[in-house]
Amino acid sequence: MMNASANHKSPDLTGIDPLRWAEVTRRIEAIEAYLALPFPTADDRAAAARSVGLGAPQFMNLVRAWQVSRRPDAIASTGGRTRTPRGPRSGGLPPATRAAAEEAIAALPVNASHREAIRAVAKLCAQRRTRPPSDGMVAYIRMSLLNRIVGGAGPSHLVIGRAIVAMPVRIDDRLILPELLIAVDLRDGAVRAAALALGDGPSPSFREELGRLDMTGIELLVETVEDREISMAVVAEDRDLRTRFSTGRMLAKTLGSGIGPVDLIYSPRTKLTPERILRAGADEPLSPADAAIVLQAALAEHDRRRGAGEPVLLML
Image (cartoon, rainbow, N blue to C red; front, side, top):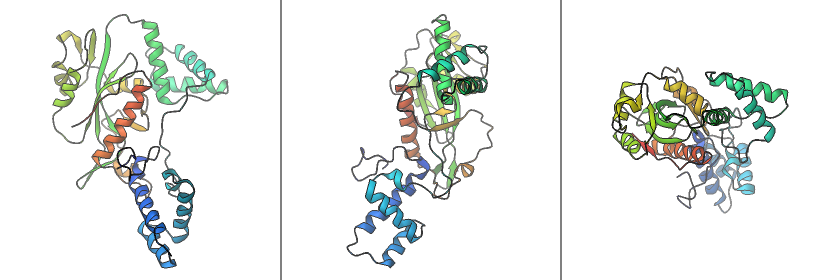
């Protein structure tokens, strides 16, 4: 329902905070219904405004904005504090920014944390008065430099780990933050397989997706017993599977703070709750289907920027 390419009657909400999709859709429906009235009265305006929780003056401002632009983002504002979703930049990094980032990262020890890399890059960019790259781009540049230094020596590594998706989803009468089971290639940061876990079920489909990958010369890095069992089915020999790694830290170093506009939390002991994320009055949790749409689009753009094919997002 969220993309015009899927249904000609549906608004294209690309670029809109996913937690506001439902509200923006309601606003469009209310505006179109109001504009369809031949001679709307003051009572009609008041009724239409009430249907979306606004006063008549606020509603008419939305009507005028919609008539001028026909763009959902023109009527998406809450009128108060809003959250601007992160998205991929349309162009590449300025040469001065990339040069500063590479120089700052190259000066760090290999075992430096992702936060240390971000601070070093931001400091050098500030000194050179150039815009710092995003956290995710810092992770990508760092991984590219490391690959350049290593030069392909030794086995390639695929880390299998889990992260909490900071995107509230409603399942029946429950609000959850879903878990993402993910396989990331440490050579380029590309996502090779991903599964959105909305329950406590097993992961046979994720195991099957891993089995479709060419695992020649690749070592799998896992942390938990469960992920080891998933991986055992696809490695050629036991020596190709290495455990006792902090996969959360590896994912953070490789992916940064998330995938495109989707924030990830790598600690399973996070105190973040769905209610804390739904901070604006017009924010609403996503359905499982819409959560999958958001994440699949983010994964596709993430891998496209790395020259990799689009990964398949599985629902567990």
